[in-house]
Length: 488
Image (cartoon, rainbow, N blue to C red; front, side, top):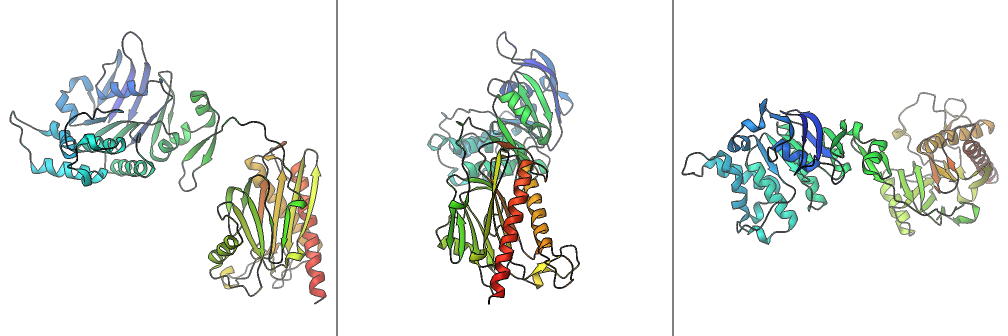
């Protein structure tokens, strides 16, 4: 659809863009990224025909741009510049109607039903119909941006060129605009757009061109471009790559320069004991990975709660009921990891383990009334709904890598299974060694201060501390629950 070959050019005597080549296929949403002054707008102006390159060529639909007449090119390519003058005394509809100029024929131009339909559809798509009769000067910057996009869409182009189209738009309109553009590419529209927002470009673009000092640094899919080293090299700033929670597109988080943080220890003195729950409210938020009823997954959490429920607890609407319970006790659900267990709170056990430059504080509530061997076949858990009875918290006083968090889950699980084996706990249905209970929960949380821990496998300092702390805490809690049952 569009081919740029060895484009070089700029303004005056200096070259801003140097030797840029790329192609864009029909129906692509193609993004151009780069810091200020990297040549993004100059490149867009050259491929639109607004600026003549010093050297190189641009072909649209196999035909050189400079061989089109202005009206011919306007029927194929529409441009929405970064800043558009709004000093005209036009209404919104009149402004949008200007997009139909390329389709007008003859000396005395006539307005057709086709023109009217195109204008009405463009205003509907951009959410500008409700103020169609307002003067352009009365609109906000975001509203004007949508009007000029409507003007470009009314042109009914095959290629749409946009220079930072989400400027001046609030979050909801950014999403609506990009959703619209993405849906239009599915119908064959080709969109080439400059972006400043790395994450938006990654979410919506099929391919990206990353510019640096007037040249192509990298070109490819969002996964090819959104690489920490690429972004750090071009933007000269520290970033960390993260997956989007719902779609397979990478996202970048800025890493601000922060002063060195004092180390914080999570320890027994922070435990709150109540008849129906135990809790820890650390002095700083902790980075956590958990399978709790509340606060599952990754997050920074400021409270950790393990709640006792009766063995006859109705699990049918447990998430809603649990949320109401924790909120009723004053815990912010957005910052809390909440778990539930049939184990009495007096049977909780904990252990602090120190290994070289890291320490681990583990807390466990462990009962085995519904212990199972996970390797044995059985019917669905939905037919045997019971409260979970082994909950484990692991608090690491150190800075953990992503892999250390995941390895820590594995190490803690291994330690739990070993504690059950040494206690002789079996699956009542199969008679084989139990590996856990039907709905165990596990938490790994770290202060992210102190010595860096890249790994948490079984022979690393962090792994050894996790293994010992979890094993001892689970073993002691099992002993407490067994003793209490024997005394009933």
